[in-house]
Amino acid sequence: MPAPKPSLLGRLPPNRFRPPRGQKKVYLPNFTLTLLRTPFLPPNFATFITPLSLNKLDLKDYLYNVYSIQCLRIRSYVQQSRVRQDKPGARLPKPRRWYRPRATKRMTIEMPATEPFVWPEAPTDLKPWDKEMHEKAKEEQKGEQKLMSDEGRRVPRGDGAKLREQAEELLRGKKVWRPGWMDWDVSGRAGSELGPHAGV
Image 1: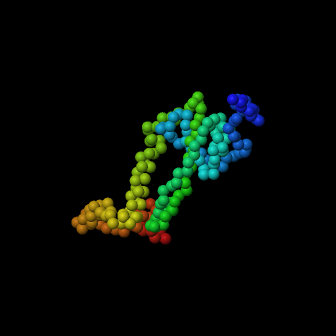
Image 2 (image 1 turned 30 degrees about the vertical axis):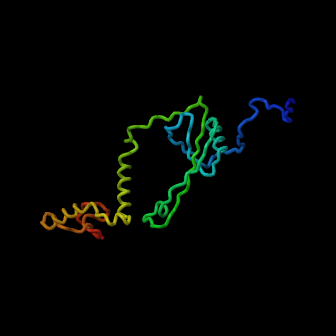
Image 3 (image 1 turned 90 degrees about the vertical axis):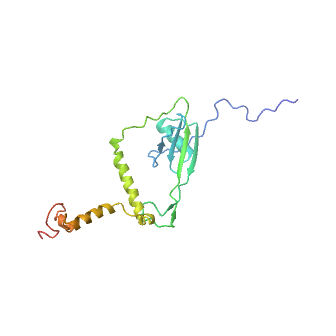
């Protein structure tokens, strides 16, 4: 059996191949990276929300030069947003006008096992962040959006019992009806018997 012919390039010395690393110098990055809490991943994995224009080499250079983090592997995927009616932020969403928000790009990096990253425990006391107030405001906003929709117009309002009690008190003579503007003065303070044109 003839001996194999030697390769023209010869044998490569060990550690000759290095992963490609970009040489683009960015002094003031104009993008934002969002680190996600991923308790289902091992401690040497991290997931980021990145701009759509950011590629794997850019993320690898950024983490290495800024945070001295070595990325062994990077996986990326683009997640399409759900189709909605009309654009977000519209006061009255127009039906049958479909709009797809911008897609979201996520990248998951694998770091060396010797440099794990463990998320700190989530806080249990959320009073410093006014969690209860935000939840109440969110529920109230959902109720207003439901009343403004076509479905909410067919649902009776929840203040009917209160209006009924006020009407019964007026009929029985317990309260005397008066215009609401009589309770406000020129400066806008409540509790005054003067009208809006008093003192003019």
